[in-house]
Image (tube, rainbow, N blue to C red):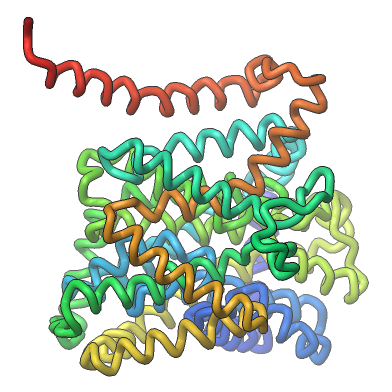
Length: 504
């Protein structure tokens, strides 16, 4: 009852006129920031941080958290309508969101994304409210072996993302791991895979630059090649009845992905330094793996939109938990929020809940209000997003190219990264021509830089003994499940090959 009483007080604080106004402005600004390629929640929160010194600390953190929420919703908009991820957290949304838009079902994809985001945010908020101290302790128990086991489990879901062609899927994963390894070695600090001794490669390959190149420019080139520019605009005009029908279909076909994304995304978000991007990608892989119709993924299924969208919103809430309870940021955006809290004289950590009760529960209450406000604002703007898709492709293709270039440059302000982005777009086009799956490579690029250092740290802890991944109580079961999932497709492939051999 104490929790419910504190939560009700927090929601009343969030609904005060100034705080409610800050929530509405923050969510609206975040929606725009999330939809713009190259910006994302990190840049949005960093740019608007100085404005918050004009309001009290509670209102300031509520405003920044609302931007974070809005950006998580907004990332799906450009992913679905243009095929350009608004942020790295929305890359997995393009896998099925863009095919749905090309089929004239953009409204279904956008409604599914909005509802799944709301479900993910709501479930994460409830888990945050009820189990914050307990989950903070679980997050602390995750050392390098446990995190590597979790990454291995994520890699196990990759095999299913590439369809039945397992060798091409494995090649795609290895290619992604190589790209992710470019730059300085995280353990020794030595440079590696620096192509042509160009110093620009020392900082590594920016993921957002790669994502915009692959799913912005690459998708545009692929569409032009497949259709010769003659793309029919079949997106109908939006009506309230049409949105209601889409909401009903989204609920019926996307509930499983929403549930998987909500719980998995929140759990991954709680882990320090994981964040929403790995959570959304892992949720997509798990949703496909447990689906009765995995062949629909990548072709346009609401479940493939619901899983990553629920996951990235749940992870955004989850990443707040270690920041508030332990003083450890769970994502780059919460690292900026942590800096703001320190500037305002607030000390994140175990004593924050006891010493700053009003601030903490006001922030938690704002999570619920921001989540509801983001849903309403997002649904209200869907007709505008559909209207954009009625533009002829001869106009839309240059718009996509210009947005990709502007977004890629805005992310790093580097001409080298701009040329690299174009090269990735052309490379992605040729990979699709030869039927190589792109999703496993993208996932490997995200999780490779997390998996490699934790693997090496684990082996250093055990003096090179790999049994550390099996003997620890948390890492052991996760590793065993991951290995089973990795070898199952191989056994199916061998059985299929055996069935094709003629009887003697």
